[in-house]
Structures are given as C-alpha cells and as structure tokens.
Amino acid sequence: MAAIRAVIVDDEELARHLLREYLRGEPDIEIVAECGNGFEGVRAANELNPGLMFLDVQMPKLDGFEVLDLIDREIAVIFVTAYDQYAMKAFDAAAVDYLLKPFGQDRFRAALDRARRRLAEKQKMPPSSELKAAASGPGQFAQRVVVKDGARIHIIPVEKLDYAEAQDDYVALHSEKKSWLKQLSMSSLESTLDPARFVRVHRSYLLNVEKILKIEPYTKDTKLAVLVDGAQIPISRAGYARLKELMDIG
Image 1: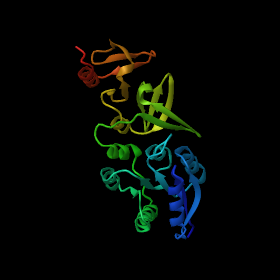
Image 2: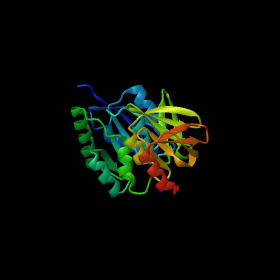
Image 3: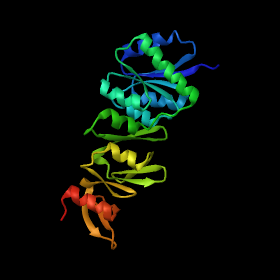
Image 4: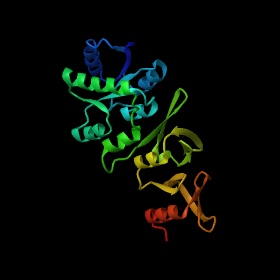
C-alpha cells in the first residue's frame, strides 16, 4: 500500500523534531513537509495533497483552528496542543485526534492509530467552527474570520466585518466595501461571533450592529438597515425584535 503522506505544522522546532523522531518507526508514514507556521501549513496542504496533518493549536498568525478552516476536511488531523482537559473533552466529543503536550510514544501511537482508522473509513473532519466553539468555552468568541481566496488568505477582524449574507452553501462576508465567499453555514458563523455585536436580522443576513447608521421603514412587515458605508440590509419582523432587545430601541 502507498504510504500516508504527512505534514507537520508547529511553530516549535523541538515539537517538530519529536514528531519526526516518533514517525521514524512508522514505515507507512511519509513526511512530505514540515511547517513553522499556519500559512506554510495551508500552502503545504493545498500543494502536496497530504492524507495526514499534525497540527499545533496555539500558533501566531494563524492558529490551528484557522488552518483547519482553510484545508480539505478529508485530511486526517491530529492536533498537537497544550490545551487543558476541558478542551480535550470537546475534541473527543467531535472524534478529533489529539496529542496533549507533553506526550509519550505510546500516546502518539494511539492517536496515529485513530488517524489511520479515520483515513480508512474516509471520515471527514467536523467543521472547524464547531470545534473552536466547543473548545473555547462559554463567553469566548472569534476575534477574526479567515478566508481563502485562491492562493491568498485574508484575515478579517470582526470589528471590520460589516455583515454576512447567506448564498447557498456559502456565506458572503462584507467588509469595507469588499466581499469574500466562505464555504460555511450562517448558523455556524453566527455561533462563533459575539451576540452582543452581531445580530441575525434576517434569515439571510447577520449584521454588525456597530455599522448601523439608521433604520428606515421598508414594507409592512420589514424594515431596512442603512449602514455607514451605504449598504442596505433588510430586517425581518423577528430580526427587528432581536435588534430592539439588543439596542434598546423604543
């Protein structure tokens, strides 16, 4: 059988070295790339078509969840992390393989066996938004949204996200008069954002309330939000009720 192509993504050289040493005893695994940051990991995943990735969670620039958000969900991922046991329960519930630093060779082999089974059964990774929401715990929300546009990666700070618009299996993210498409459900995006800032004002629209300039009448049952950049967003009756509650509108 062909070897499983593996990529190691960790900003710590010692961690990459340990994984490399452990993998020397696994003849069915071929390391095709070692990456020192998340951007390199995304590039390697896109260009080298690996079946397996060892992925650090806590990294600068792009963290592990953001990398997961930008790669093929058919890649089996083993998280390598210093997260606490609370977060590990979230990974376990989602059937995610992980190695909690520091780890020994027996624990490494157990995680590797789980990854082999995942590949054999052709299971897809769960959406990264679900994992991050579970691992972050209550009251912790995303500070930015990452989007892949061809070979480029855009990072949108949430304070600069004006609104999101549902488009079939995608969400259009609108920021500073630019738009990007991301393959994501509106409900998944909504679950990662602070509900004190972002409100589902319509079945197809999630709105940053700090970007609202004024609200105008529209039809009998709907209103219109005019944003500071001139964009006009419809507000349903239910959406207006949520907006009134948040903004204390009379």
